[in-house]
Length: 303
Length: 303
Image (cartoon, rainbow over all chains, first blue to last red; front, top):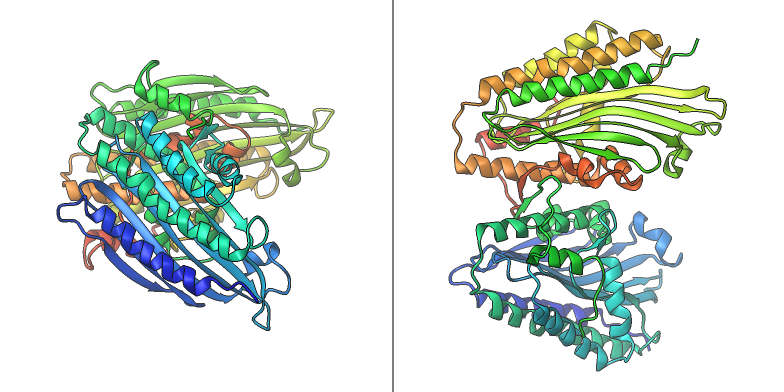
């Protein structure tokens, strides 16, 4: 029997979107998520939720379910017999106001292509979650990685070992020879029966997606009352510039979305609210800022 | 006899760099350009000048002269017999503090490739200047275009007619279906004897480059004392986001520089000092902001 998780997984991530938005709103006194519903002309729909708050300067949590004839730009990468595709995923980026709280990004998706008889010819899960601190607290990085590692370890002994360096390789600003953040996990093309049977893979995918809240929310709890100076805010804005550079120069998701005519405002939800580019800015040696740069030049073991 | 303008043109743009920097510094009470000298490992050098001021929040004027064996990324675009290349150019971007003053960009360059006997196998001039207003004053757009048109008209009756739409086509944010600004002129691969003999082409190139000061400085003169609100500054920062999007997603110069291992800080001198991305920001109908967007959806005749 075919493994057909699409409707189940879609229902799961719609629920997860609620859960994540509720967890984030709990920190805000009056700001709420605003939802934009959108439709894709060639098939599908999406729910973009954005919050502009006091703790979260900008947070976007997007769920979409899109389908239809395989777009031309996809054709070279999938089996020739493929006629239609289906993709559903949740994607989020959180830019906190306080530079002591790290920015985070997560994405969990399911993709399948079917032939003219509606038989699946390829299918996979992909996803990941990563952390971009402005001021590095080792215990936050450790907690984030440890939580994701636990979710991985329950399902496959090699998952964390493979997905952690995959994340480092992916979120790399090659033009600056610098990692975007301190990583997390990243994986793609996880096919049924490759490492796990379909149903077990689906359970893993749910578990790692659900673990995001446990990985990130306690960090917000711990850092939100820390004071910060104007100079520290400025440093955050300069580092956010690196985030923009990654997303516009290297991120395959962003570039794929733009090429396939995705909804611009949903794709660019990930871009930080305020950003700064200063010519040749270099932190002084021995400062917390210089320490961050140091850590971002070579991935560390955090769990 | 071969047309060999490289040293003459390099000397000219080094002088022009001084002239432009002096013209800009004249507006500042105490800020001066700071120069960074850099060397290219495979051959060549550059002089990056940056000013952080009260009138000009960030202005960068860069001159470089680079040469050596033809880099791999260039090979497909030039004659097979080419062994060495030489490129020299001036490149500038000016981001004023006051949103009533437009941002401007200009670039004038000479490029040649030689074979193993040091004989030129291809050579050309390229360049352009364009304006990106935040609040549109028709007379500024007209003055800018008129000045460039006059410089063009002196040398060839078709230059402005060709280079104006070329500029519009080039500075286009295709992912938003929106032009970056109100244009100017843009041209590339102007080879000797194509439209003009080499020496006359060189004189044109000097004249259009020199006309930049006459095209832009009077606009700064006229707008610098205009008051502006925090909301108008915010609008400038949102529009600067479009500038970043263009430079990182579409600008061939930027992407070429990154691919060939150019100096990052000199390439990113063009990025605005402070930038903002707001989800789904749309100006209210009938406002000056909405009028700008309107003009940016379809190129206008300004001269």
